[in-house]
Image (cartoon, rainbow, N blue to C red; front, top):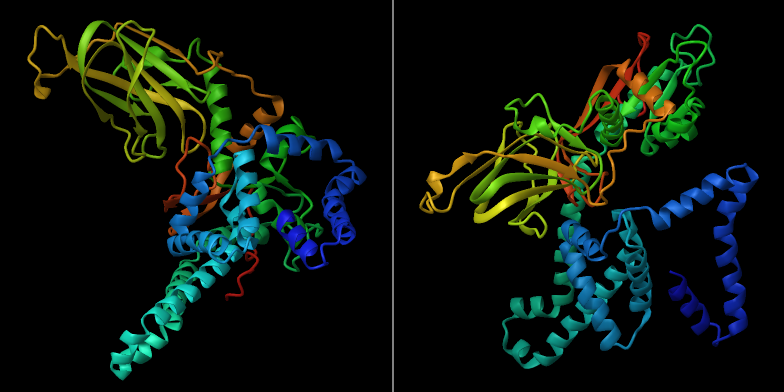
Length: 500
């Protein structure tokens, strides 16, 4: 927004550079409040590491995806706003909407990162430009068709005269209905109920923190994600509330007294726990389990950690490959993002299929390869909708030897896989390192039991928006699982909703 406000200050101060300079001082000083406060509280290193992470380690997203997200939420605003900005800049010679939107989009393009709420600063410009467009187009239609209007009967003439208002009213009604649907759906209801339950279970009847020595739940540590952590710390003033990510470095491995915890586990929390569990499990075996892919046992699996992990099946000779059948680990809970490629020499591979598993079945899913001739077939997995792991329980290749079968799809047999090898996009080794604090967190989780589950039945936004997950909405499937390692008191939960 700095170029836009700077332009307005400069133009409205008789183009005074002094005024522009004075205005620019708070623009610099206000952002310095954050690092200054971090240094004052002794957290400057954490602040600095966070900034470096923001600009170097986050997943890249093309700026075009921003338009896809906005189109999915409000296509009318996106279309009218985009056309309106172009109309205002070219026909009206007004650069304000362009100076408003342009630098923000350029910023997103340069850092390759955004979240849906980053769209918010763009919305006023889209609304203003769309309004200017509607008004000007309506007036031009009226002006150029005054002869036609003169011959229209009164009711039609009245409607024609009120055309701008009719258009605006139609858009307003559409927007009102859309917002009403969102309000009625209440996509965050299950999350607020989960917070209510946890807060009530960790506070005494007066609503204070756990100071009452007779309270069965005193000295309880709340472990959750950053999405909910601020509520417990700053709304309910529960000091012993921690993010599971910060606990990975701060959680003591051993404590004098057993740690009493209540965990608020969402998909992000669960995904991290499962990744550590998988690493710890893999430490007990000698390899990453390629032999498990062809043992006709869905209870065994091949697993590898890194994005871009692959397995390569050697058929021993050239075969016509009809299809590949893959049974995914937890395939009824996760959707895997993968690419299938084939090769005749094991060196040069050609992509023949790219897509995602259904996420609805533990059975094998069949992928048609169109009768391609190859000796090697490679599966490259770019993570799943829960974490970055690649994990498959069984694979079967269907096809035939070219000189023995006619090319009829129904004659495809289950081919024998001679050898299997594995790797990843960086040819790195399978990282099985799990720190003591992470092991302690996994142990805590495994020693808890579920006491309440809050399901999201509406179209809840998928917060794990990594390159290997789908952008947009997930219908259902969202859940907050509240877990404890002790018996909760029988006192009623805190009522934060105002309901009886």
